[in-house]
Image (cartoon, rainbow over the protein chains, first blue to last red):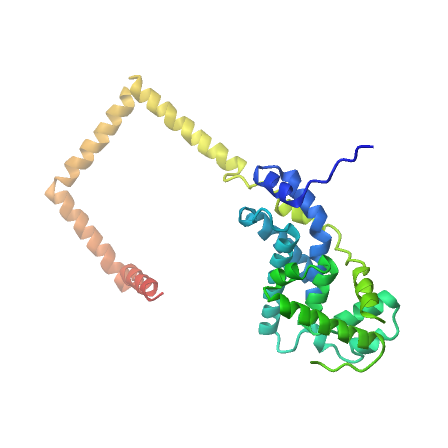
Length: 185
Length: 125
């Protein structure tokens, strides 16, 4: 049986640059959910995550010519999304006197909520309770797997730092999920 | 829980469900975006009419059928030229303008002062 191969992301970018709008629509279909996931996990706000997702795809579409053939589209769009989210977080920090929502929650805190939830929800709540730098690394690990170099590219950090953040994040998650007290390092 | 189990659990987490209409709004803003026309339909109609009238006048002049139009234009221009070469006319015009300016200063409306004030503000900006 002959199975038609899915076009590669790089080919879809090339087709879009030649005026094929359906090619970009395919890229949107492929990545909108992952991009929204990254935005929501970073911003913790549905409306802002929605806006950041739209902004990321809009910027990607406008600057598609700067995409280097051979590099991964997912890494590129995630980097654009991450920067859009950072801008929003900075604006939030600038305009609000309070800390970011993930750390500003009143009691019961995310750690307390971890206990009563099912496995996936407990893990998600535990991830939410991590400091922002660890949470983002875990989210990208979820989206990109063990591609540390790609994660480092998205975050603009050295690969060693990414591995350290991920290790510490996993340590904290393990302790949170086993109910042990966690101290911020 | 071991590190491997934790990694597996992270990988198996479902992705967040995007809000309804997100994909459609992205596509409308990017791939399916249609640029807004520079002119609306009624603007095109007005410009078209003006263009047609201008074209009709040009054709009228070129084909010689517009001799009356040319004659009227030349009559108006000769009257204007004759008036401005008349010293008495220019004097009365100057007197009238001066009186109008003086009256506006008396009534508290200062168009010249207002103009200079506006230009000062623009310079300051």
